[in-house]
Length: 265
Image (cartoon, rainbow, N blue to C red; front, side):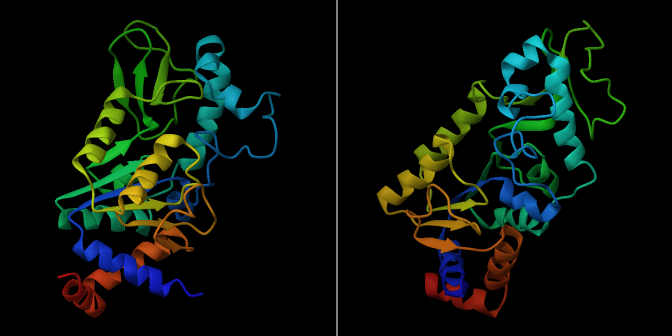
């Protein structure tokens, strides 16, 4: 069945909503040329790494503490895959839509920084950002465009401590500040929850969709494949993120958008 009908229905929900929560995963960055990630460690779905360990072990907090050179090796490969890539139309649409709403929060699992680069401001980077670095031993922190020219693993220029990206590695706790922001958004309530390009395997990613569905709040999923929440959402759109989001924006902006606004009154 064509996805035009659920896209149009979702556009109508967007036209009437005031408070929106959007949850994104690797699928929204696929149109920027990035692979779809498995956790923070994409590119490695075919068995162990070249060093003979699973990527979850290589990219773990334990490995960063005990063998930082190995952990940084794979962080560097992920950053290399992001290097030179740009936000795509999907990121740009979400950033542009935000000004229309009382609240438009983007909760992303992605560490590529594309939502921020595209202009999203009400942004929760729950897994962090590859380009934000900090020292493990002192308050030093910095932001880099890429890892070109960095010695890996890098040392702090002030205390010679280990510098690492501000990302959540396997086995590490989620950042309290970002979790608190997410809880506040959920507690205040939303009119619409949209899940985009994520398999929703982590409970904190699936739960906002589950909670909204139980309360009768409209929910939607934009994803070519199935996820843990596909059976729960009201509107399921089996398309790539950039194409679907462009269609939504055109419906909201164009003649169809005028009709949607009238319909939403």
